[in-house]
Image (cartoon, rainbow, N blue to C red; front, side, top):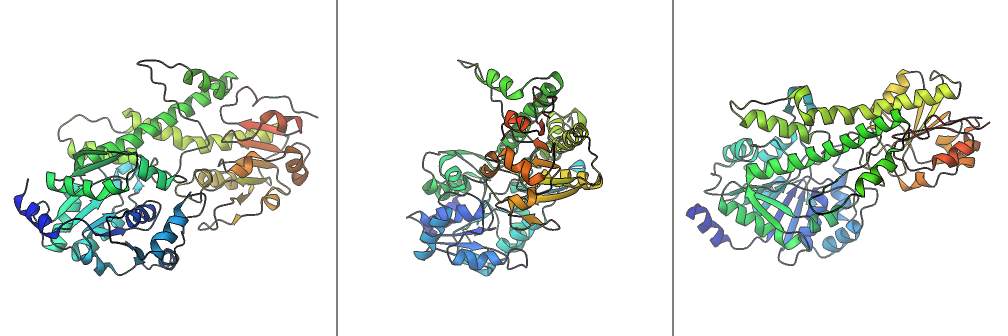
Length: 477
C-alpha cells in the first residue's frame, strides 16, 4: 500500500465530482445513477462533438435519452438529475481536471478476430484525454471490457506518460467492468454484483467508494485489476459458449425432426443439489458489442500474459469453436430461407424478403454487430430484394430501415424474423398472407416468436430454428 497515495486521498476527502467518458449504453445510465446518489455533488458526461454522435450532448442536457427502445426509468432519471443541476454533458475534456473520479466506457472491438489484435484506438484517445487533464489523487476506472493486462499495462503507461504522474503513488487506477444488457441498464447496474479491481489496495478501496452508493441489491467483489479483466471476458465467453451449445442442439434437433424447445424444457426441469443446467436459448445469431468479441479478449490475454504456457488458440479452443457456431447461425437462416422458397416452388432470384428486426436484441435499437446484416448480404447476393423493418431503429449506414410493418410485408415472398420484438409475436397469419399476395408465402422464424401451426394452417411454408418437428410439414392447399 502506498502511504503517499493514501495521504493524497485523505487530503482530497470523499469523492464528490465524477466524470464519465463515453455517452453510450454503459456511460449514460452510469452517469445518471452517479448523479442521483446523494453523496455525489456533480457528474459530467464527456462526449466528443463528432458528426456521428455530437447530437447526444444537447439531448442529454435537455434530460432526454438518445437511447431508443425500452429502457425502463432511464429518461425519467435523466430528467431528474439534469433538472436538479447534478448532471450535464460536455465536449470540453479539460473539465476532467475538476473530477475526483473518472470512468471510461468506450468500445473495444476487434478488426479481425483471427489476428487477436483489438482496435483500442478510441480507448487510447480517451485515456490520453484523461491523462492530459489528470489531477493528483484522481481515481481513473476502466469500465470498458479489455484484454487482461490492459489496465496495469497499456492504460497505466498512457496515463503516466500524458500526466507525468505515477499510478499507485499519485493517482488511483482500477478496472470495474460493466455488466449490463440493453433493455435493463439501470436495473443491472443497481442489482448486479460489481467486480472492482485496483492496481493496488488504495485504488481498489477508492473504486469501491465510487460504486457502493449506486448499488441496491448488488454487492462489491474486490480483486486485482487483471483478475477483474479476466472475470468480465470469461463470463461473456461462457455465455457465448452456452448460447453456442443451445444453437448446436437446435441444429441437431432440426436434423432429427425434434422440437428443440421441448428438449430444452426437459433439460431445464432437472433440478436438485449439485445439479446445474444453465441452458440458454437458440436463435438466428449472436450480436451486440460484447459477446461477439469478448472471447477474443480472453484468448488474447492468455497469449499476452501466458509466457511459455501452452495455449490452444483457434480450432482447438472451445471458445473459438463457440464463436464459429454462433457466427454460423445467420448462414443457417439463409439455408432455411432457401429451403422454404424451394418448398414454395420459388427461386431466390427476384424473391422479396421482408426482414423483421435489425436490432440484435428484442425491444431495443441496439444494432451493433447485428446478425441480420450477413443474412441480408447473402440473400441479396442470391438475387433477392430485402426490405428491413424495425420499430426501434431509425437509421443504419447503407440500410433503409422502415417503421411501416404492413408496407414491408406487402408483396413479400418470405417473412424472416431476426429479432424478437414484441410487435412480431402478434403477427396475424391471415393478414400477413393477405399483404403478401402469395398463395404460399414463406415464414422463417429465428426467435420462436410465432405459432408455427397457425401459419401452417394459413398456407404458409414454415421454417424455424430448432423446429425439426415442423420444418418438413405438409403444405396446406
